[in-house]
Length: 347
Image (cartoon, rainbow, N blue to C red):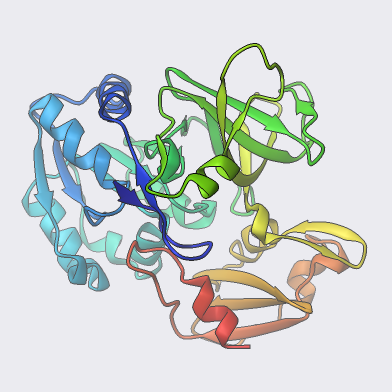
């Protein structure tokens, strides 16, 4: 049993089958070519689903796994020094940590010659900070993994193979092995990969599906539904609650939670889209938008910034936040993600 991150409310216990963990572990080792020479550095607490990759792929491949104390992640230099000293070859971290390390300019002090694979999942990764990592490690493999706890950690992946502008949204890619990704609109009409840019909610089917929420049949019934494309036999889909669309390469783009989709001034708006553009500002370290009567943007920067001219040509007027609030540093939850519940309490 693993608990969800709690980013959308109270964490829920998810019952995950051994077969799902085994299938996922074999996929990881096969896709990223893990062997006994691999050296991993763990960031995810063992109660967080990202740790499944660290623990079980290390056991399967005979790799070495270093457990990094959670409190050390507040000190990038200490962590980077450890990566260098232990010749770490692979990391699987949440984007907030990678963003923080890029912003603090710690990468400049360490060559990290042994670091060959940088995997991340759990949040939208801004291309601005990702480009800093890619510039520092031009020969490394970078992969954006996506998936909630309910589908055994990861159901889609994108190995980064082209350049991206800072304001672009990074794809979450295509389905993992033995997994199928389906997109439906709010009326449960199927959206095909040919319908480029049409947004809908992502549903997942396959061997990765968990057994549901521990001791909570009602929530399980709400989240794991019969495939609406047929009723011939039991065919469960997991309702992710994430808004996605296809790009011209057949890859999925994730705009964030449906909870973060708002109706404002007659328009449907994904707050994640606004954050992606704001994060491309050269003096922004990170940002998060919430909606409370108006769109409010919290941003992390060394100085107060005027966004009006910067956003004028990048966003329609109805998507530009009404208020901008500078904060010194975002509070992260136990899993290393921005704690949005704290932000809502500030306004």
